[in-house]
Length: 444
Image (tube, rainbow, N blue to C red):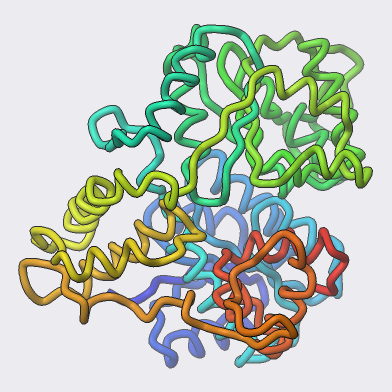
């Protein structure tokens, strides 16, 4: 099935040119000339990617993206196009969840590169196997994971704010949802927040809401995260990415259990459980002046650490079997299992991406498998074999905390600035790469 792309563009000639180019390059392309027409198309068709102009005659690309996320509950990637050189606005769109932006006139080769990267990102960010489902989750029985579950069962019934620690891809959101499901807030909503997308300008509106007319693009009242989660749980994912200016605003809301929407003169009482997660050392961030100590203590009334895959290899076979079953359902395949040789090869890998990486690898293997079982020949060439020479000898590209910045710079140089290639060399996703580039002041 062809990849389906929606182009939202009010300039008829440019829109037709984009649609023609996309079709010539093997995509299925639909053209909408305004905000309302785009909403109709999105409501009646499924799209893999949306290319939208920033300014539309009856709205804008950011409003459309917000509508898709909030009303349609869709994570379809957006690329925002602008002919007004409004780079700051386009960057704000990325912080709200757009994958990337393009300035007009558009270079076809750059457009193709960004489309491919956006579609790859969409595949990586599909609902993960560790998103809770009481009927479809394999718990595992390793000592490390059983210790974790004991801590979850201990803290879930309390009102403690919980800080969930762990590497990327270990399943921190799954653990947060488990705590929510076992808590007194289980009948309320569970609202996750991507803290990395909250800029100091947009955070008050996203977290606390706004009234119509509070600022230029506030065309209607909007409930913030805390009000949406009233009586339930707010999950602050990657809380270490919060801009410093936003941390004070968040601290006040947590302490007082009150929020004030932008443009309002009155506070709203909210009763929510706070769960937060990070793969960063927040104590180091405090020492470096990037994270508030008072906020750290407020969200860290109880800490839980999710073990990486390499520390729970006893669960590897069970997890692999589960992911094979899941991939069979998704891909319409009937793979029975995996050979011992192939399984041993998988277990020998570094798995810096943890469960997320294992799921994606198994999914790919199921797709390529011709027989009943996954064979050695079905396995990908693992990036962990990529090497580079340093003064200390030969070592792989996988990030090490002691010299992350140097490794990122080296990977970007080797990839000639291509962040998709660099992220694969470093065995991290693009979002993590962008966050670390921002952290170390590396030019984006």
